[in-house]
Length: 120
Image 1 (cartoon, rainbow, N blue to C red):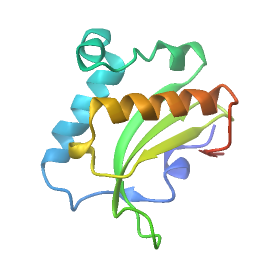
Image 2: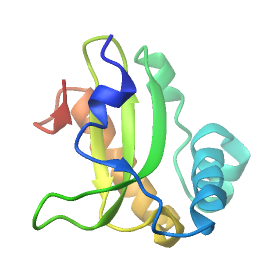
Image 3: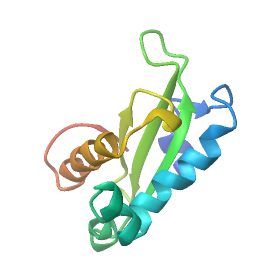
């Protein structure tokens, strides 16, 4: 299986967004992993990832590629030979539950074979 570091090779962990990133990352991870927290926020329960043989990961990364957002939030689906990712083009502390829901929908479409996206 490709390592998460290979999947995240387009960016590096963000350090410029301040101390709120760790708390915001935990908040988004809770939405993804805890059905009650996800439902309260309006985020789909992510049992589909485990059912598809993978895991979900979220992190904030810096992007130094010209034209991209300087700090992005990336959601990954990691499974042997089927890694995919989608981006929300803002720091994780600014990401809303609605944006996470949209990103998860896109990620699920990619995992289910519904389009081209990031991956291995």
